[in-house]
Length: 288
Image 1 (cartoon, one colour):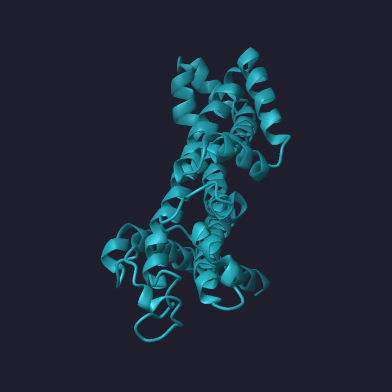
Image 2: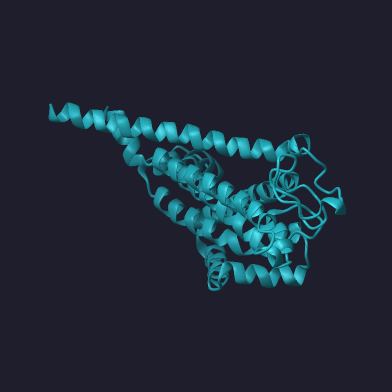
C-alpha cells in the first residue's frame, strides 16, 4: 500500500509538471505569435498621432488609454511586443550559441585557448553586467541593435562557463572514451556525445534568461541607450511617460504590465522546463 501511494504521488507530480509545461509553453507561444502578427492585431496605427485624443483615460475605444500624442496605448503595447520579445529572443540565441561553442571547445581541447578564453570571461564577469552593458551601449550610441550587441558582449561568459564545466565532466565518461577508441574524431564526439548531454542545462538556462534579457533591454531603453522614439518598445514607452506617472498612470503602467506578464511567463516556462528535464525526475518516471 505504501509503495502504491508513493507511486501515485509521483505520477501526480509528473502529470502536474507536464500540464504546467503545456500551459506556460502555450502562453509563451501566444506572446511570440502576438509579436509576430502585431501589425494585424493592432486596432489602431501605433504611430498615428491625434493631439485631440491626447492623454485620454482608458475607455471602450481605447482600453489602455492614449499617450501624450494621442496614440492608442494598446496598439503601442502590441507593436512594442515585436521589438521587446524578438530582441530578447535574438539576444538569448546569440549568447547561447556563442557561449556554448566557445565553452565546448575550451572544455574539450583545453590548452592555451582555454586559459585565454576563461581569463576573458573572468574579466567580463568581474563587472556588473548591466553596468558594463550601459557603458558599451553609450559608446556604440543609441538604438535597439546596439543595446543587443552591448548585452551580448557581457552575457556570453555565463554560457561559456556552463558549457565548459559540463564538457569537462562528459568527456571523461566511458562512452566518450569508447567513441574515441572506435576512431571518432573530436568533431564527431562533440556533436554526437557531448552536445546532446549538455543541451538540457543549456536550454533551461537560455529559457530562464529570456525574461532577464527582456528586462535589461527595457532598462537600457528606459535610460535612452536602447530603442529610440518613436519606436514602440516597452522600456522606451515607460521612459517617455515617467513624468506623468501620478497624473496619467496608464501611460507608464500599461507597458510595465506587458513587461511583467512576459517576464513571468518565460520564467515560469523555464522553471517548468527545468523540472521536466531534471534527470532525477526522469529516473522516477521510468520507474513508474
